Length: 245
Image (cartoon, rainbow, N blue to C red; front, side, top):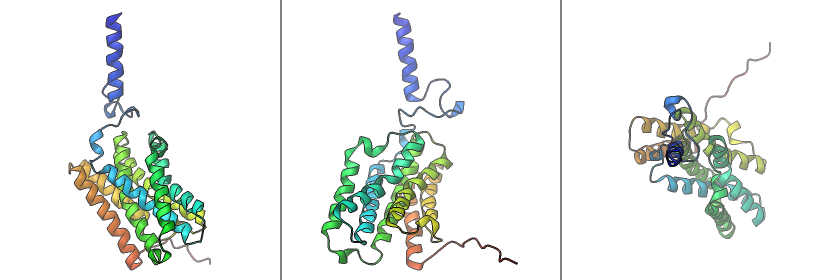
């Protein structure tokens, strides 16, 4: 009996670590979702990228409500939905625990940002403040989303797409709730910037570049492209429908 117990315990340990037979990429099967694999794909600055994306997206949501003269409750709602929207969809798709359900600091940070926006003068948020906050969050969340997806055993290309989902879905929800045309339906460069950030991080990581460097390069590339789009009104060419005969 002792030998059987030892064998079962050893097998369970292998499953938890993703090292047992029939698990992992060599078998064509995903790693178990109970552990991150490989953990080194989440660089040391990942929590800071997560916090940065969360805070600035929450700020963009609160600002969207503030510009429409809404109440404090509405600002808090917009801040939370915008801050956690993309990460929630990502976690559901990759089989991870939904981050803000298990960590109260995420929702608390969104609410704190909403209160900060509520208490500050409206003059501070005029002009393109919303766009610039959104650009910072876009870059940070793209990289973090891709890193977390790879950490859960998602292959490189889908992982980069998870970075795009993380960065864009919160803003899409914000625009829909605010009655604005969704950013994804406009020709200006937005999703492309998220794809550049996430794709650069994943590609550089696959090439063996140190992950902090890959994360910084990816985030700066995504932010740079989005900043250029905001400043110079850059847009992708739209599909041209043929004129009716």
